[in-house]
Image (cartoon, rainbow, N blue to C red; front, side, top):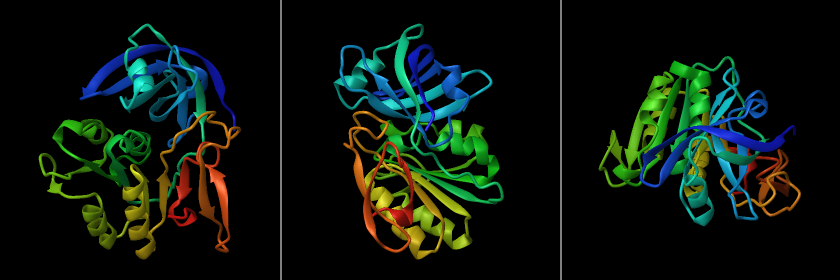
Length: 257
């Protein structure tokens, strides 16, 4: 795993929803080698532990990455307090990303809440071949729908309370309908209960599925062993892997749900 550490300049900052921010960071050596599904590890000023943030946009020509995150604690609150012209202490790109299928005709990108941002690089790759199903609790949390559309993806918005979107409920509803028409692959990121439901649905329909797991991390490179998850190989033998190093992307059938 090739990665680098440095202090990188923020070139854009936007508040895109309540307590949710989008940053563009100038980091040419990271942008040059980053893949969809990888993440960066950012150290908030005054804190000892880094925060893992998924990569929401890759521009190797411009030398920038886009990251989108919600304020979940004091660390991410400190990151959200940074502004254009400030520097971020960042390590990246980290982890194992999504598998890109050149011959795919239709793919589903399933994001739940802050699991929607890592779907953007996939939408950039697949364009009109992608159907992005995004789930949120309510209207105030909805993000990145126009971004997905601008990249060519068809969007299906779902909210649990029905205050916005195409339907009320969960992402599994429109996903099940889409699977009945046939898709080549499903990519998903979001809360664990959502990922489990998506994985079970894809396994039942014999559809290839990759999931990006969310987990607390300390080192981000597999040294501290703090983000272990239980997986199984093709023989059914269970063993432990690490979300930061072996993931965060795993095949749905590989995870012990």
